[in-house]
Amino acid sequence: MTGHDEDPDAGLMLRVAKGDRRAFESLVGKYQKAIINTAFRYTGNPSVAEELAQDVFVRLYRAASKYRPEARFTTWLFTIVRNVCVNYRSREGKYDSRMDTEFEREIAAGQEDPQAHLIRTERNLRIRSAVKRLPESLRMPLILHQFEHMSYEQVAEILETSLAAVKVRIHRARVALADELKDLL
Amino acid sequence: MEHLEEDLSAYISGELDESERRSVESHLSVCAACMTKLNQLQKLESLLSEELPPETRSDFLTRVLARFDQERKVIHFRFRRNVAILAAAAIIAFFTLILFLEKPVTLPTILVHPSKRPTAPISSQPEGTADAEMIAHLDDLENMEVIRQLDDLDQFDAAMMLSESEVTK
Image (cartoon, rainbow over all chains, first blue to last red; front, side):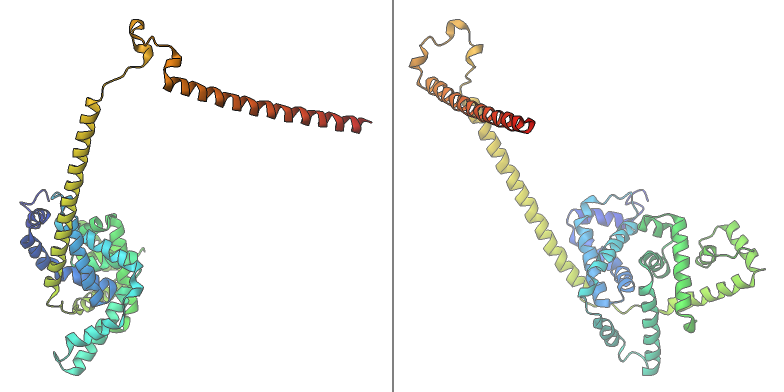
């Protein structure tokens, strides 16, 4: 990207830097789901994921004056997401993991037949648990590529590493998951 | 034969260029082990795509906007505070400069032409006299201290000589 003519989000960010609430609202509306989902897959806890997503948007506002439209907006945004998620690890203990399953029940209740719901919930928990157990160096590259559909190149930019490293890490993450979840394959 | 590793994942993700893709396909056509691994990774791909995260709470946007408003107030407050601090500093600097410029400049005596040096005797200058007396007094004290230390050294030398002579005996 070379400027906000090509990246409309870059234009919104420049408005946010001037304190434009509507521009901020547009960016939140557009990216909240992707950010919450990324944080959720990283932490495995929906309440924590929303807290972290709020932190991301607050940091985005604080850092708005430093944003330069030369950088692709999503790359810049997900660099904040990565930092917030990594910082979360240090205070992980203070959150209650029970919130996870309670939230799950609350969301899914009454939406499908109980048997199918039970199977789906169990499978989802297995997948999330396996993703969460991946080593830090493999988890974020896999989440960004597998679930947020980012290219290897963009993942490398966000994680500030080489394309070759991303390629290896994503493969190792997949092999580890395939091994962990082999009875579901 | 060397098996495929990360190229297998890159192949599934569509991250290979045309020649790399053809090379992988050529390998897969003759390597059963890599073909099995590919099938396993493709099944994983399908499993992961079925996993959907829970819905976001409906009041998320409201809560984020509340934090945005709070942040904006903090940033505005900090900005106004910094402006006030800078303004106060500028005013203080201005008045300090004014006071400095209004004070008459007194040159050191040595720089003043001999004809314009003060001619009054030193005794008639109370400030200078007091300073000179004080310095002289300090010098005296210092000299007395030096003499006392020299006396101590003499005594120490005498004691050493005595002890040496006793040893030689």
